[in-house]
Amino acid sequence: MSPALQADVLLTNARVRTLTGPGRADVASHLALLHGRVVATEEVPARRVVDLGGAVVVPGFHDAHNHMAWYGLSLAEVDLRLPDLDALYAAVAERAATLPEGAWVVGAGYDENKIGAHPDRDALDRAAGGRPVWLRHTSGHMCVVNTPLLAELGLAEAARDVPGGLVVTDAAGRPTGLLQEQAQQLLNALVLPYPVATLVDAIERAGRVYLSQGITSVVEAGVGGGWIGKSPVEVAAYLSAREQGRLPVRVELMVAADALHPLTAHVDDDMPLGLDLGVRTGLGDDRLRLGPVKVFSDGSLIGHTAAMCEDFSDTPGERGYLQDDAEALRTRILQAHRSGWRVAAHAIGDAAIDLVLDAYAEAQERWPRPDVRHRIEHFGVSRPDQVLRAAALGVVPVPQGRFVGEIGDGMLRALGPERSGWAYRHRTLLDAGIVVPGSSDRPVVDGAPLLGMHDMVNRLTDGGLPCGPEEAVTGLEALVSYTYGSAHASRVETSRGTLAPGMLADLAVLSADPGDPTEVDPARLREVEVRETWLGGERVWSA
Image (cartoon, rainbow, N blue to C red; front, top):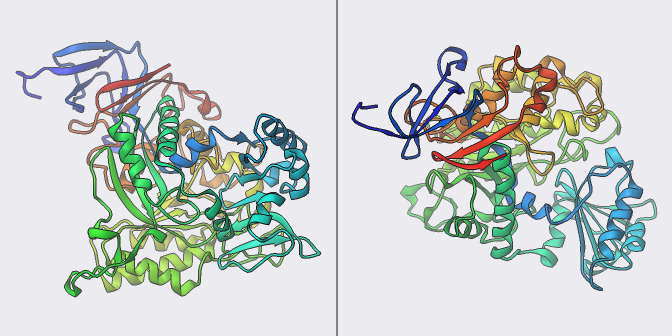
């Protein structure tokens, strides 16, 4: 910085993890901020000096895969992260008692692996006193509805086929209320679209939580279509939130593949698929931008709908399924790549991962693009050969470390001991030369980054069982994933993810250094506290 210039703010008496230098281990004692960016990591003149009292400063956390609007909506719904079915039915009854006749009871977050079974439609009828009930599974890949809603859908007494999904029935052929994968879209006519104003409220509600956890950037993993989208004009909700000063963090939006359609561009433009006006990945700025197109290839590991090459360990004969015909999925990925989109394909089972890797390889061979960084969201159950192939293709796997803790017991049952080390890898990905991002898939699990980092380092389920302990990483490597790694996955590592001069002044102030095992016992990483969060050189949250 020129001696004639003054910084806006100088943070002093701090331990600044710049995440630069060899091993990304450099530490500074000062950080100077000017016009929303870092200008120096040394003491310089400044208009305002902030003494941090020896606290640790790190780049703001970047969640590479979350569902912001969904999470914000869930904060106003019945919390179903409960110990058993009796507690769930009691929670439904309690909420129903506050609602007028005919109003829906809406809840989210149940896990049949923890409560013993999926909720039953008849028990929900009794608990809700006849009111409609809609309860979403923690994975988001299935839900349960009761008799009034089944009747509206024409499913009260018999199921019907749904491509890429399943209306689950009992032994007598009567629907149980459980709707898996694409069968959830049957509810769309009754639920969607949410009003933009409702979504703005949800976005702001979620963003305030994010700031309290040191999160300054997120990727919203699916808007505008499919079972994941909340409105066909969902981007307008994020624009409105920004215009109203109610978008607390930086957001990159994945566009659901269902929102894309054939384009009538000139043949020389080679854009067969996209959004009107040729809008695609990259439109926007540092606060709000369009990211990849989101393609769902399969379902959920704990829900047993992920497409696997071998049977689930606890349900012999079941291997999950794809969300669409394999050829249709391949074509969608090829056309999106050809039209200039980055692609983020949801693939959890190894059979789904094979399909996606094949499509990425073919797309790049037919229409080469430099450093495209297509992604595989979750990369949930990956064989060693798939790790090496992803590295060779330059594909970015996006695993969720927190899954190991919060839903790891269910994953262990689904995979058995032989394949448990394949689940949500990290160490093997790093060793293959892949830059690994940090993400949560919130609200599937608690999305606090320090919880995710804790599980990446310890690899223990919440039940205390080891889950692929050979995939553990160091605290510093986990910190790099949630900062530089996630920025790299979004191709924004030149503006965020480190605290070098010229980078955006987004940062979290912590009570201790998660990258120093002599200061923070790895087994207590989750206890590190966020004291402040800064965005663009301004303090936006403090404890």
